[in-house]
Length: 422
Image 1: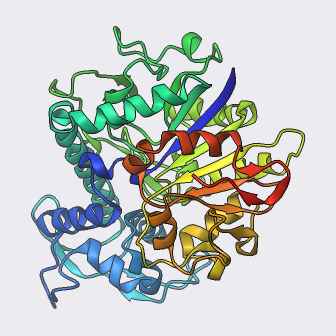
Image 2: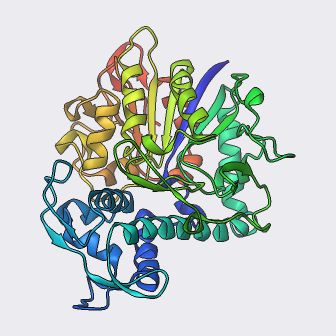
Image 3: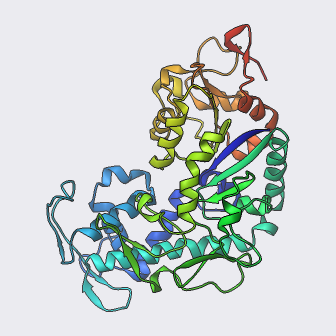
């Protein structure tokens, strides 16, 4: 049976009550206002240490409110200096000199913020996200039962034609609530990571490559705790941090945040997941991306490299929810998400075309693809790419179309530039 690798990003969980990227940004603002408020020269947009970083360093980059970018800035700035100023230096050319603001620290005393406070804030925000997701996960089965059943039926349908494996970039329990039989590498009876079970190379797996709300930490070891209502071990704010060779400091946490993920995945089980990822991409016949923002460069590069290997052609199918007013890929190449997606799949926006033979020209807006319930696809036969714009749950309602795209059965065999009408 052919193998289908499925990459799940944040967009796959939004319909299940999990926070959007912008919601996490708001959560971090709230937590920083409680634990790291600025207490002098206070302004509404600069009222805590998190917002101070967001608004003062590469602010134009951060208009998307991508908390991963901001956390990366927090981690970088924390590594520059132990005093109260940031100067130009070999590692900080892109950051102008800044004086740290006066804050009330996590331990409630007044101080001029420094790298220690930023390191502590990184741990507090990291743990706050984990706690928030755990609370949402506790009631998921009852609150979202119809939606969970919908994706269960969708994956079971695909499973008739494929062995499946999931690279889950989310920390939540949405996927495992629908498909609890997936293998995570952990023995659910003992909670321990089972290397022998993990390395048997079977599919039907779920790699929580950035951590999970089910991960529990005792000492420095990560174990699996099935019941989210049980008591979990100490969180990152009460644990030591660890330093990389490059000088970055990261919290000892059960989830990984920020852009510097490569330096955080050398612990078990992150290491095992990561080192197995290249092989799983190689073994796959088709790759399905659901709600993935294409922001993890190490995953993109692995897929891009294997896409160049023409000894085994893989169809790439992307499911995401996009605003109807977004320009389609064929017109201007879309947004940053689109550029990263096209680069990962070795495509160019000039390769993209409509997925409906009733159109003489490619539509200008994504709304036309959503209305027609079809794909925008690549005309490059060597790099098959199909993009579905109306979200995960809507795709579940059109599973026959998704399966056709996964199989590459989208073209008329005798008309290479036309497509079947669905």
